[in-house]
Amino acid sequence: MKPILRFGILGILILFVFVSCEKIIYTTDNTDPTITIQPSIIEATDNSVQLYWKTDEACHAEVYYGISEGKDSVYTDIENRQIHAVILEELLPKMTYNCQVKVWDFVDNGPVESDEFIFTTLPNEFSYLREAWEKYAEQNYTNAAVLIGESLIINDYNPEIIATSGWIFLKNNQTDSARVAIESAYQLSPYMPLVLTGRALLAQLDGLPADVITNCQIVISREPEWEYQYNSSINIHLVRLLLAEAFVQTDQSINAQNQLDIAWPDNGLDPNIPASWIVNSESFTDYTLALLAAIYNAIDQL
Image (cartoon, rainbow, N blue to C red; front, side):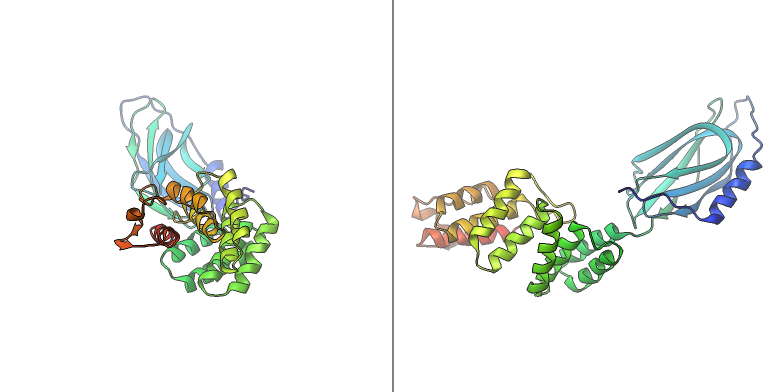
């Protein structure tokens, strides 16, 4: 659900005074307009920001903004006015944006550029989720747990957030808590790839390869190109490698090799050529052991 736009009473009163007192000046000349009051932030929410600036004559404007220096998003205000108040929406939470305004007067003299400035949106449960995965990628699982806890305080009914807590519990060796979290997320969203992959990991720990196979095959059939948005190493290749290991454990080496070939096409193993049973310069006399070593090596490379 899209968050409801919120603005403080002070901001509303300020805008009311500005708009009610506006006296628009129209001039027909070849002179560029002037930004008499540089853009400033009236109020920010987790997904929007309200900007204000003023020009010496009626102008229309474009607002360039973005997370990168390139400011790759543009808001266009075609109305000519002297007092400008715009709302930028659909922003990412707890993110710093670079911004600049350009104005033209009503006969298109310009553009005149404002000073460059920055603004930062407020946090919400998804910004904490994003930051938790950043700490996860850094192997800082203690801070990841703190951040996902903040996310759960705001929203404890979102399956992605609950599943993430499960993944972090696993890294903190809290297997029972991980199992509760993953299964709770599964009850809410039984086809979410992050949830199913988490269930596969738990089944692997529990020595239940048949359950690993079931969960992984659902992900592959529904999301064959899946990559988790907050951690690119959690992707369809990991799912295929978990599936390959489970196939080895259930004496399905051909199926295991097929999954390995998709996840790591250059593995070089051929079950019929013992000379190919080499992984990281280590030779094996048993194909199954070489296959497992290749699977583990591919997982380590993710």
